Image (cartoon, rainbow, N blue to C red; front, side):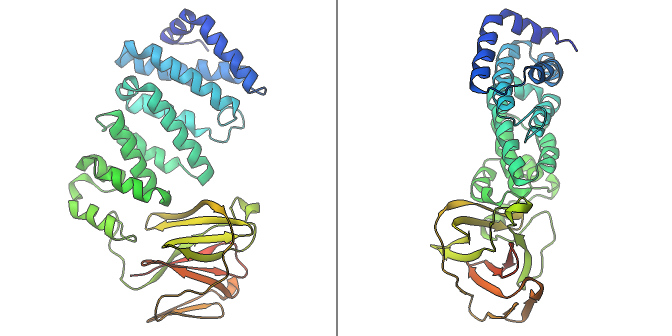
Length: 331
């Protein structure tokens, strides 16, 4: 496969500099696959450059610089290439060149690196495909690279990265009606500003779904055994410090993030919590059953409930025979 003329011209004009960068990368990453890098340049990178220069020929040099250096680093760290941990990074770059070549021409380095960071993060969360589909829709409608990046983070929150909730809500305030609606999966003509107000105020509200019943309900589980790709070495215990919900497993502590869009845990720091059963008023535990005002949830197949903690709108309980904690949405 041959390089597109614009890519070939940039590489030829800066041959000694590009060779120097490649040699430095080989020193830093001894396992760097030269053949895989050549294939990456001749395939996806060439196609990306060709699409962008059709819109803006003057963007070629900066775009090639960004793609060359970022590809070398990611290939050397085995994020991309044969057996890479985040192969969707290249798909993300290609998506931008197809749906937003003008934006990529404006800020190639910022967008190339941001998309790589996002999809590397998604690879550790076990997802990203749905986010890429949403990003394609956003990319064709965003008016600037900054708009696209802000909308992309809101969409990542909506697709399940609950730890982005606070920052995504801040960015949501800065987006225009159409872009915000699309990022949140709502038809722009159905969007209303009251939806954003409710998103701030109500953790279990989703504007893209009908309102759920007001009664408390089990909304899912979070966590899994390390042998199955999770974070917990042993069944966790729940606790709360300063309003923050935490889960401990062995010697590791994790912050719990959960809302209507999903739930996950992020490393918090070393330490252990004492097993506790801190329940909202009117709730109690009977073996493996959680009993609340007008409701009851049986988890007998997971063993006895070992701990419980709650915030104003979320209750988390853990189980003797499970590496996953159960989440209950409170009202």
